[in-house]
Structure formats: C-alpha cells, structure tokens
Image (cartoon, rainbow, N blue to C red; front, side, top):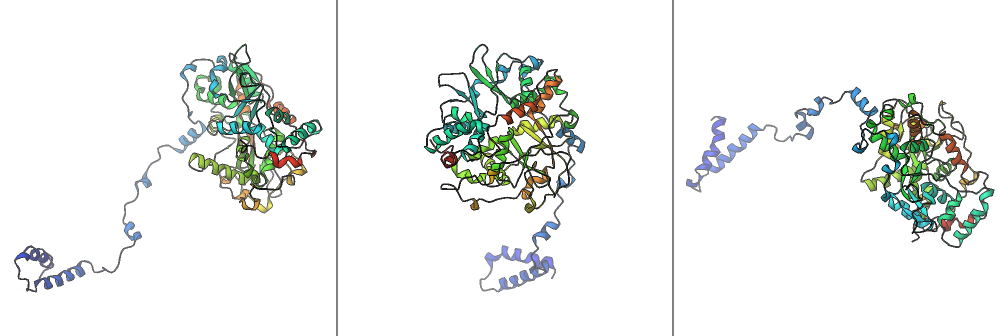
Length: 518
C-alpha cells in the first residue's frame, strides 16, 4: 500500500464513520497507520529547533542595504550651517537691524517684580518658581520703576554668605556683622541688605525707542542685560538680555546681510573667544566652584577631568537646586556629583535624562556655535581639542589654574593662577537635622563621567559677549573691551581672599534655608 493511500484512509474512514458497527475494530487499525505516518513524515520528532536555528533562514533586514539619504559631506555641511529653529518674523524682513528699536523685542508680561523690603526667601521662591532669569526690584508695589535687580548671581552670593563661604574684606565687615546678627536672631533679611553684599551686574537702562545698535554695542562690552524704559519715564516695560538678542539675530539672520555673512566662518578664523580659562576639576567640592564663580564674576564654569577634558558645566542657575536646607551636603560633595544631580533633575522634569553639549571645536562655524547657544540657552561654549584618556581618580590634580598637572601633557593654554582661601575646606557648618549625613550621598569620580568621551581638552571659551562684540565691530560700532567689564565684576565682589571671618560663624545654620520659610 502506498503512502498516499495510507494518508487518505483516515479521511475516508472518518467520512463513513456514522454507518460503521461500533464493535468493529477498524478505528484501532487506523490509529496504527496514523502513528506510522507521523514517524515517516517527521523522523526527528524528538528535536525541537532552537530560536537561533529558526532565525538562520530569515531574510536579511532591508536596513542593511539602505543607502544614506545624505553624504558625509552633506552631513558635515548641515552641522556647520544648521537651520534656524524658529521662523523669521516677517515684520523685520527688508529692514536694517541697526534701525530696529529695542522696544520691539521685549514684552511687559515678562517682567517679574519684587519689593526692596521683601525677604531673600520670598525673592528666592519667586525667582525659582517663575523660571524668570531676573527679578526687578522696586520701592513698593505701586511703583513701575526698577531700582535694582535680583538674579542667580545674587542668589549664589547670598548662599555663599549663608553657608560661611563668603568672607568680608575690611570695607564690608560691618555690613556682614549686621546681617549675621539679624540671621542669628531669626529676623528677615531684606533684599536691600542682601544687595549690600556686593553688586555683580551693572544696572543699565535704555529707552524703548533706542536702536539695536546701542544694545549690541552695550552687550559687546560685557553687559548681560538691559532694562528697557518707556521713553521719557522711569517705567520699565521689558528686559533685553544677551541671549534674547542673539536668538533674534540668529532667527532673522537672512534679513541682516552684515551679520549673516559671518555665520559660515570658523571660530578660529574669526579670532573670537578667550583663552583666559576658569575651570574646576570634577573631583573638587562644589563649594569651591561656587566661590570661584563668585570671585571671578562669571556665570558658569567648565568642569574638567584630570586631563582637562570637559565633562560638564555648572552655572549660577543650577544654584536653584541648593536652596533647601536638605541640599546643604551637596556643597561638600564633588562637582561631578552635582552634575549628576542636575542631569537627574532635568530627567525628572523633561521625562528623560539628557546630557547637554556645551562645547565646540576651533573648526566649528559661528552658525554651529550660535545654534548650540540658542538651543541650550547657555551663555558660553567651551572650545575643546581632541579628547584624551582620563587619569585615575586618585591622581586628581588641583583645580585647573592652581598649578601644573604632572599626569597630563602640557597644553598651549595657560590657566591663570587662582588661590583659594584656606577656610574653604573647613568652614562649612556641621550637618544638623534636617541635613543628611555626607556619607549617605553617593560620589562619582570625574574619570567615570560618560560625557568625557564626547568632548575634548579645554582650550578656550566663546561667550555671548564675544559674539555680540563681533557683531558690533563688523557693523562699524566701537564696543568697550569685554575684559574690562570682567575685571570690574571681579573687583565688585565683596569677598576677601585674606580669610577675614568676623563674628558671623555662629549664624550660618540660621540662614542656610532659603525656600522653606513661608
């Protein structure tokens, strides 16, 4: 009997089963043939194919043969000349940017006010919760004229005072003692007193009818923001910042040929940027970084590993994470650990961890640099060279600028010497409840940060001031030397490196909490 006949028998037997005698043993014979069929058709029925064997015969993925939609040269061109993220405003098309009024770029709704007698705690809450970069200080609620500003620089300075890191010179010793006595007694510290600790940012105003040339020339000299007043009055109607102006010129660049022709050029050819670098090693305590920012009058620092590879960035705005008393131990922990806190916090807010890129190369175009500044809302981009391997954490050198690194090859850029006060390592108050013990806070080494392989060795910095200074000079204007403004900011700091302590040590724990008093 053929296999075909055997295969057909179960089917025909089944179709006639209703007419068979129940006592007939035909079903037993059919079962025996079925078993024989199973053995013949599947001689290796005891072996089950593995997942790998099943995939072995799968067709290759079409992605393997996919052709790139852009060539390498096109990708490089896109990186060097990125498209603007915002659309150009048609009302500025065909207009000379030098004759656009500053009042056209500001909105009164952006203003956030605080009174001069308001407490630092209330001002801190408003600053951090409103996401405003700066608060305008006025005499009372009925006024529309600003007498000063309160920003993250002021907050950083007050935080250093509250934690004992900010030390007075002879001129400010009496002011410090007065504030310390108020804090010790639990009294409110008004903004008028907090501002007496030192003024980092000059208070500059312009009438709303002034041309953008006045703003560009002012910003190119190192001023970071301008309060815009209604012409003929002292009423503030807006604030124009360096970043807002750079973003405006970037998004409307095609309408401004003088500026637009600069974007395709490389940073190294434009001769912009500074080589007077101020950076901090990632394994240094955070309190040293904040003190260094305050003393040098800068808004951010590059965080580097043992070979000066950029592994992160710390700015004054990040101080908002230190305004609760429970955050005090972060000051004693490393800068690298604080960067991990920044990234973790940003991940919780944005829904995913992110590693912002704050660096460029000397071959980066101005367009690439400005696009990054606008995208990250940063004030500066660190210029880096080819990455180098990190040293071991145990061989961490002093903060860059304090001396040569014996574990790194020499670099062409000399870091200016920075002498830190001797009290920095010992003056932080002992942790009392609700502080957490420092040992419970994890620490990460600078050599372990994943971003080190994405950057390179620090060699320079390009700031918004440098870019606006370039725009001003290209337009025939004469901005002041930005280095002069930086020297003034450093000179306006009331901190003294001589370590004069006064009598405020006992008041530190009374003023460290800036947000929880409501």
